[in-house]
Image (cartoon, rainbow, N blue to C red; front, side, top):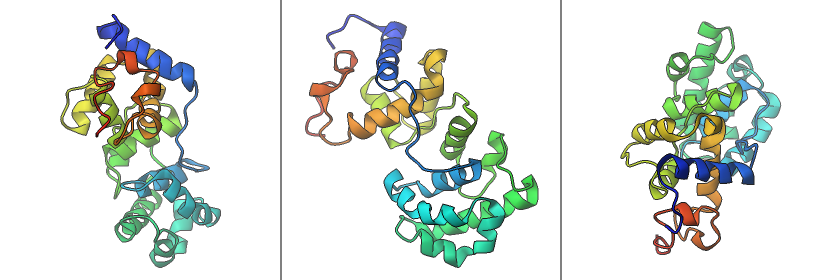
Length: 217
Protein backbone atom coordinates (compact mmCIF):
# COMPACT_ATOMS: atom_id res chain seq x y z
CA UNK A 1 0.00 0.00 0.00
CA UNK A 2 1.63 3.22 -1.13
CA UNK A 3 -0.82 5.70 0.38
CA UNK A 4 -0.48 7.08 3.89
CA UNK A 5 -4.24 7.08 4.41
CA UNK A 6 -5.45 4.78 7.15
CA UNK A 7 -8.63 3.90 9.01
CA UNK A 8 -11.70 6.02 8.30
CA UNK A 9 -9.83 8.27 5.88
CA UNK A 10 -8.81 5.30 3.72
CA UNK A 11 -12.33 3.89 3.66
CA UNK A 12 -13.78 7.28 2.73
CA UNK A 13 -11.23 7.68 -0.07
CA UNK A 14 -12.05 4.23 -1.48
CA UNK A 15 -15.72 5.10 -1.81
CA UNK A 16 -15.04 8.65 -2.98
CA UNK A 17 -13.11 7.24 -5.93
CA UNK A 18 -15.76 4.64 -6.70
CA UNK A 19 -18.42 7.37 -6.54
CA UNK A 20 -16.43 9.64 -8.83
CA UNK A 21 -16.12 6.86 -11.40
CA UNK A 22 -19.81 5.86 -11.29
CA UNK A 23 -21.92 8.50 -9.53
CA UNK A 24 -25.26 6.70 -9.97
CA UNK A 25 -24.63 2.95 -10.16
CA UNK A 26 -27.57 0.72 -11.03
CA UNK A 27 -28.27 -2.96 -10.85
CA UNK A 28 -27.75 -4.66 -14.20
CA UNK A 29 -30.96 -6.64 -13.79
CA UNK A 30 -33.85 -5.46 -15.97
CA UNK A 31 -37.27 -4.80 -14.40
CA UNK A 32 -40.18 -2.35 -14.52
CA UNK A 33 -41.63 -2.65 -11.02
CA UNK A 34 -40.91 -4.00 -7.54
CA UNK A 35 -42.42 -7.41 -8.29
CA UNK A 36 -40.32 -7.93 -11.41
CA UNK A 37 -37.23 -6.85 -9.46
CA UNK A 38 -38.02 -9.37 -6.71
CA UNK A 39 -38.46 -12.17 -9.25
CA UNK A 40 -35.28 -11.22 -11.10
CA UNK A 41 -33.22 -11.22 -7.91
CA UNK A 42 -34.58 -14.62 -6.88
CA UNK A 43 -33.68 -15.96 -10.32
CA UNK A 44 -30.19 -14.43 -10.17
CA UNK A 45 -28.91 -16.70 -7.38
CA UNK A 46 -25.93 -18.61 -8.77
CA UNK A 47 -26.62 -17.08 -12.19
CA UNK A 48 -25.41 -14.04 -14.10
CA UNK A 49 -27.47 -10.90 -14.51
CA UNK A 50 -26.99 -11.23 -18.27
CA UNK A 51 -28.43 -14.72 -18.24
CA UNK A 52 -31.37 -13.68 -16.08
CA UNK A 53 -32.16 -10.70 -18.32
CA UNK A 54 -32.15 -12.91 -21.40
CA UNK A 55 -34.77 -15.16 -19.78
CA UNK A 56 -36.91 -12.45 -18.22
CA UNK A 57 -37.30 -10.22 -21.28
CA UNK A 58 -39.93 -12.52 -22.76
CA UNK A 59 -41.27 -13.49 -19.32
CA UNK A 60 -41.76 -9.91 -18.16
CA UNK A 61 -43.49 -8.99 -21.42
CA UNK A 62 -46.29 -11.28 -20.19
CA UNK A 63 -45.93 -11.05 -16.40
CA UNK A 64 -46.23 -7.71 -14.58
CA UNK A 65 -47.84 -8.82 -11.31
CA UNK A 66 -48.03 -11.84 -8.99
CA UNK A 67 -51.51 -12.55 -10.38
CA UNK A 68 -50.07 -12.64 -13.89
CA UNK A 69 -47.49 -15.17 -12.72
CA UNK A 70 -50.13 -17.41 -11.15
CA UNK A 71 -52.14 -17.24 -14.36
CA UNK A 72 -49.05 -18.16 -16.36
CA UNK A 73 -48.49 -21.27 -14.28
CA UNK A 74 -45.40 -23.12 -13.09
CA UNK A 75 -44.98 -25.19 -16.25
CA UNK A 76 -44.85 -22.15 -18.51
CA UNK A 77 -42.60 -20.28 -16.07
CA UNK A 78 -40.20 -23.23 -16.04
CA UNK A 79 -40.05 -23.13 -19.83
CA UNK A 80 -39.23 -19.40 -19.77
CA UNK A 81 -36.37 -19.76 -17.26
CA UNK A 82 -34.92 -23.15 -18.23
CA UNK A 83 -31.63 -21.55 -19.32
CA UNK A 84 -31.00 -20.37 -15.74
CA UNK A 85 -29.28 -22.59 -13.17
CA UNK A 86 -31.54 -24.34 -10.63
CA UNK A 87 -34.53 -23.30 -12.75
CA UNK A 88 -36.95 -25.90 -11.41
CA UNK A 89 -36.42 -24.96 -7.77
CA UNK A 90 -36.54 -21.27 -8.67
CA UNK A 91 -39.81 -21.75 -10.55
CA UNK A 92 -41.38 -23.32 -7.46
CA UNK A 93 -40.13 -20.45 -5.29
CA UNK A 94 -41.39 -17.78 -7.69
CA UNK A 95 -44.82 -19.40 -7.84
CA UNK A 96 -44.84 -19.73 -4.05
CA UNK A 97 -43.86 -16.12 -3.39
CA UNK A 98 -46.35 -14.91 -5.98
CA UNK A 99 -49.13 -16.85 -4.24
CA UNK A 100 -48.23 -15.37 -0.85
CA UNK A 101 -48.04 -11.86 -2.26
CA UNK A 102 -51.59 -12.24 -3.58
CA UNK A 103 -52.92 -13.92 -0.44
CA UNK A 104 -51.18 -11.86 2.24
CA UNK A 105 -50.06 -8.57 0.68
CA UNK A 106 -52.74 -7.61 -1.82
CA UNK A 107 -50.43 -8.43 -4.71
CA UNK A 108 -47.87 -5.86 -3.58
CA UNK A 109 -44.20 -6.41 -2.63
CA UNK A 110 -43.88 -5.56 1.07
CA UNK A 111 -41.52 -2.84 2.22
CA UNK A 112 -40.43 -4.73 5.33
CA UNK A 113 -37.45 -7.02 5.66
CA UNK A 114 -39.21 -9.63 7.79
CA UNK A 115 -42.10 -9.88 5.35
CA UNK A 116 -39.75 -10.16 2.38
CA UNK A 117 -37.66 -12.86 4.04
CA UNK A 118 -40.83 -14.84 4.81
CA UNK A 119 -41.38 -15.33 1.07
CA UNK A 120 -40.16 -18.57 -0.60
CA UNK A 121 -36.69 -18.20 -2.08
CA UNK A 122 -36.07 -14.82 -0.45
CA UNK A 123 -33.14 -14.61 1.95
CA UNK A 124 -31.37 -11.67 3.51
CA UNK A 125 -29.34 -10.82 0.40
CA UNK A 126 -32.40 -10.78 -1.86
CA UNK A 127 -34.32 -8.65 0.63
CA UNK A 128 -31.39 -6.23 0.82
CA UNK A 129 -31.32 -5.87 -2.96
CA UNK A 130 -35.04 -5.15 -3.18
CA UNK A 131 -34.95 -2.68 -0.28
CA UNK A 132 -31.98 -0.89 -1.84
CA UNK A 133 -32.85 -0.92 -5.53
CA UNK A 134 -36.56 -0.18 -5.23
CA UNK A 135 -36.85 1.89 -2.06
CA UNK A 136 -33.37 3.36 -1.88
CA UNK A 137 -32.58 2.02 1.57
CA UNK A 138 -28.87 1.94 2.55
CA UNK A 139 -28.67 -1.85 2.76
CA UNK A 140 -25.62 -3.99 1.98
CA UNK A 141 -26.31 -7.04 -0.18
CA UNK A 142 -23.23 -9.26 0.11
CA UNK A 143 -22.79 -11.49 -2.93
CA UNK A 144 -19.57 -13.21 -4.02
CA UNK A 145 -18.22 -9.99 -5.57
CA UNK A 146 -18.87 -7.85 -2.49
CA UNK A 147 -17.44 -10.54 -0.21
CA UNK A 148 -14.26 -10.86 -2.28
CA UNK A 149 -13.65 -7.14 -2.74
CA UNK A 150 -14.31 -6.34 0.92
CA UNK A 151 -11.79 -8.95 2.03
CA UNK A 152 -9.14 -7.91 -0.51
CA UNK A 153 -9.47 -4.23 0.34
CA UNK A 154 -9.21 -5.03 4.04
CA UNK A 155 -12.67 -3.63 4.72
CA UNK A 156 -13.75 -6.76 6.56
CA UNK A 157 -12.27 -9.80 8.24
CA UNK A 158 -15.64 -11.52 8.41
CA UNK A 159 -15.91 -15.14 7.35
CA UNK A 160 -19.63 -15.11 6.52
CA UNK A 161 -21.73 -12.83 4.30
CA UNK A 162 -23.56 -11.49 7.36
CA UNK A 163 -20.31 -10.70 9.17
CA UNK A 164 -19.00 -8.87 6.09
CA UNK A 165 -22.31 -7.00 5.78
CA UNK A 166 -22.11 -5.87 9.39
CA UNK A 167 -18.49 -4.74 8.99
CA UNK A 168 -19.27 -2.73 5.86
CA UNK A 169 -22.34 -1.06 7.35
CA UNK A 170 -20.23 -0.07 10.34
CA UNK A 171 -17.29 1.50 8.48
CA UNK A 172 -18.68 2.96 5.25
CA UNK A 173 -19.51 6.68 5.59
CA UNK A 174 -23.27 7.31 5.61
CA UNK A 175 -23.05 9.50 2.53
CA UNK A 176 -21.91 6.52 0.44
CA UNK A 177 -24.05 3.75 1.93
CA UNK A 178 -26.96 3.86 -0.49
CA UNK A 179 -24.81 2.94 -3.50
CA UNK A 180 -21.96 1.13 -1.74
CA UNK A 181 -23.00 -2.42 -2.55
CA UNK A 182 -23.41 -1.57 -6.24
CA UNK A 183 -19.96 0.00 -6.38
CA UNK A 184 -18.40 -3.06 -4.77
CA UNK A 185 -20.30 -5.43 -7.07
CA UNK A 186 -19.25 -3.56 -10.20
CA UNK A 187 -15.67 -3.30 -8.99
CA UNK A 188 -15.59 -7.04 -8.35
CA UNK A 189 -17.30 -7.88 -11.62
CA UNK A 190 -15.08 -5.80 -13.91
CA UNK A 191 -11.83 -4.91 -12.09
CA UNK A 192 -11.19 -6.93 -8.94
CA UNK A 193 -12.17 -10.18 -10.62
CA UNK A 194 -11.85 -13.57 -8.93
CA UNK A 195 -9.09 -14.63 -11.31
CA UNK A 196 -6.39 -12.28 -12.61
CA UNK A 197 -7.67 -9.05 -11.01
CA UNK A 198 -6.69 -5.92 -12.91
CA UNK A 199 -4.46 -4.44 -10.21
CA UNK A 200 -2.30 -2.54 -12.73
CA UNK A 201 -5.25 -0.41 -13.84
CA UNK A 202 -7.29 -0.45 -10.63
CA UNK A 203 -8.11 3.05 -9.31
CA UNK A 204 -7.85 1.68 -5.76
CA UNK A 205 -4.50 -0.09 -6.06
CA UNK A 206 -2.63 2.39 -3.83
CA UNK A 207 -5.29 1.89 -1.14
CA UNK A 208 -5.40 -1.90 -1.37
CA UNK A 209 -3.26 -4.21 0.79
CA UNK A 210 -3.76 -7.00 -1.76
CA UNK A 211 -2.66 -5.07 -4.87
CA UNK A 212 -0.15 -6.95 -6.99
CA UNK A 213 -0.39 -10.09 -4.86
CA UNK A 214 -3.31 -11.76 -6.60
CA UNK A 215 -2.26 -12.28 -10.21
CA UNK A 216 -2.43 -16.04 -9.84
CA UNK A 217 -5.82 -16.09 -8.07
